[in-house]
Image 1 (cartoon, rainbow, N blue to C red):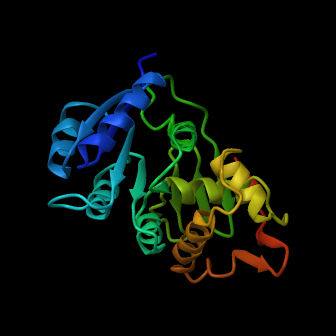
Image 2: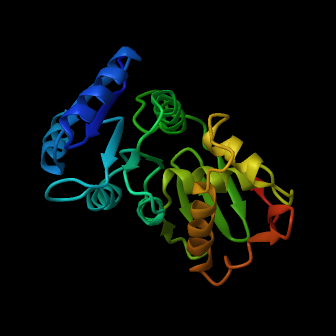
Length: 238
């Protein structure tokens, strides 16, 4: 199996070299890009398995590039920000980033986050025999886990980020069961997730907003004060 190709979009030459060197030593294929334009040229020639995007880039910034990637494809994105404020991280998750990491970061944490994202998205580009169909029907909605598509009761597709999909799948495989943050973090981010990771809250909020866009979806995921969350619908697996 060929190594996963990771594009490091970072305009700081020293940081970019350090990260690409680290990734190469860990067995990945890494390519450095100083701008969004350089990344586009790589992405046109090769299938990128993960893009590490710095927020602050010359020309088109990382948030804009992330938004564009989400609009046209399914390249997983890890956002990196040097700012101490949470706003860039939250915005990055809201526009579809799979994860974020603030600078300065621990190299071991970077690798752990990358491996977690690749585990969650490893089937996106895999060429293999068709898998048996696996669908979850709930309150008129349908999630096709094989195609990773969600249809509302009017058969309109609802776009989900990788994190939102994993969250919804966690609820559908544990219907009418109280789930706390630690469980959701473990199932969606793996055991490498930080104990105070707030990205799960942002992604849960975005998932609930997307469900609530349809009249039948507003009350599907209920909050239990002091306990966690629960999918308040029967689920039929087909």
